[in-house]
Length: 233
Image (cartoon, rainbow, N blue to C red):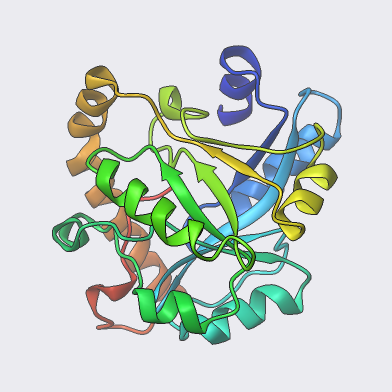
């Protein structure tokens, strides 16, 4: 469904799929794209819920256990050749009740991240996006910038995006490593915000069910606090 939408409704050449604490959907999508059915490249990723904020692990075919400190999570991403990106930094604290959890400036400074998301399409992150952009401008030699739609609904896919020289996943990786990316902020869209608002309760219920499954499967300790919840992706 995601690939159908990407190919019919957007002009994206590369898409990274980063579901919470799993890369199964990304692996399946990458296999479909590699078969030639879809004219788009898929980066296998996952959004790992570390104990100090969420981290996007790009190019990560091996599942990473949630709940570890940010430094250990980033090290696990790097150990399999992946790149680690700070997810939705500076999101307001009140959003954590809906699951949009994030780390802190001290963690961002201390951990060996590869990039930072400075454009995110989630409603009410307009100021957070600008805080993230300001933070990045003072650290642009250390961190690449990225844009991600954080799409919970299909029409949001591609509304935030990462621009880079070239058109392939390999080109994107090279641009991230060389800090040559640009991030496009989402435009103002009351309709998009309304669509998201209609889905908030559904998203919360899905996240609650997902956490229960993760506890049952043993990848999430029971009773762990809210620091690892999120809305995405």
